[in-house]
Image (cartoon, rainbow, N blue to C red; front, top):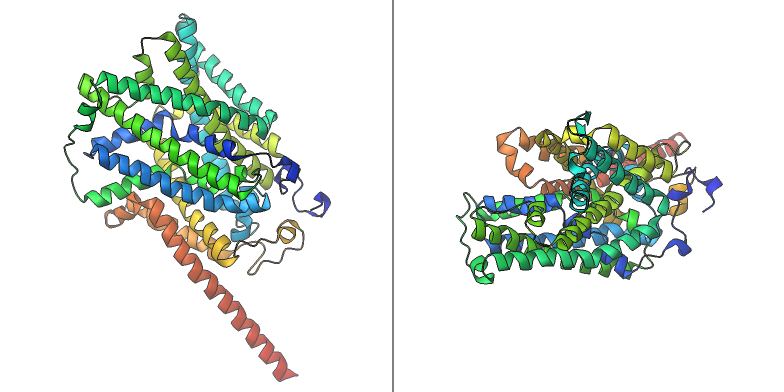
Amino acid sequence: MKQEDSIINSPDLLPTSPEARTWKFGHYFSVWMGSVHNVPSYVTIGGFFSLGLSIWQVFFIIILSALILSVMMILNGHAGEKYGIPFSILIRTSFGRKGAIFPGILRGVVAAIMWFGLQTYAGSLAVTILIGEIWAPYPTLGANWSFLGLSISSLISLLLFWIINVLFIFAGINSLGKLTKLLSPLVFIVFGGMAIWAIHLAGGIAPILNYRSRGVEGNSIFIILSCISAILATWVAQILSVSDVTRYSRSNKEQFWGQAAGLLSTYLLFAIASITIIIGSEVAFGVPIWNVLEVIDRFDSKFAIVLSLLTICLSTLSVNIVGNIIPAGSQLASLLPKSLNFKSGAILAALMGLLIMPWKLMENPESIFTFLNMVGGMLSPVIGVMLVHYFLINKKDINIQELYSFKINMRITNEFHFPAILSTLLAGSLSLLGKFIPSLEPLYRVSWFSGILVSAILYLIFYYLSNWSVARRLGQNTANTLKRG
């Protein structure tokens, strides 16, 4: 593929060259650890216990979610590995060149930039605590001075953590691989240590295993399904853009087994750690601890505190780069190919992540997370469309020359693939209406499942109806031509 023959000006969006395919099993084993072990994830599990679920029900929810997630990551990552193309280009095969703009902006611009800002601010809080452990006066620097609601120490921590994120834009994909490999043992040491601490705190494993929940109200099977959907909904963006990292895989076997082993083992540790920490703290103190930063604050050893906070910071950094910076940079470069490449697009996204003032957004977290959940509700149907198109319609065959060239000849239309767009809008609307229409609330509570399933079925129907309509019109035109002849 020559760049001058392509509609893409940025070399970052062209198929990955063989020499750039350096990611192996170990990279994929550790790449998603930051997305699993973070503060919001532990708070989510605390929410499950507040519903009245037992420890074994919560354990089942976490492990089944990990299995489903592994399958989805592997399936949607296949095209990235096989053809070396990023999400911003892959999405065009099912939605058309201009039709891909809508889901691309939702995932790569709106969701990625907002999550980048929120994650950067969250990481900066851990940075403030970390520096405060080393230099005690740091958190109170500047006394009452503030900048747009930020104290001087909070501002310094935010800018410091933001700069570290930006440096990885220039460091390249191999530096990200080194970060995730460094993070892997730290996650097992720190969060495994938290589990041991919680078990010791509770007086052994028996009191935790003997914990009796108050029981759920309503249909327990549906509640379990909605909890699984809640976990998977936090992964919608990563599932969609997983090709941004699988495009660097040396083989499909590397990304297949790396992601499967990494996600399952990480979630197994997460299940053990989250359950023991939440239930162990409730046994010991009478009140469960949902926030892992509070757990760290109770450690006696300064070394353990510093190591744990450093791991939290690195976890947040990892998920921010993989889940937000890479998709945002690629998408902006795809939207404005004459003006931006990946690096300039990623820097622009990082700046926008600061300009939205995430610390202000977090003052009313309920509204911002409702908005982000609605964006996620519109994105889950995109997964259904992409999988159906790649595996059932294209049979895993993509014409790369055609996809990148000026003379694209899509089956329906080059600009907009209406079956995909219509399926996504209908399935997404159906799920989100449940937030406002009580009779549709069950669809909203399992929006991850309903969005993917409904969009997949609708897309197949609309695709073949569209093909049948086109064939019928061509047949009529041919017949009319023959009659006139």
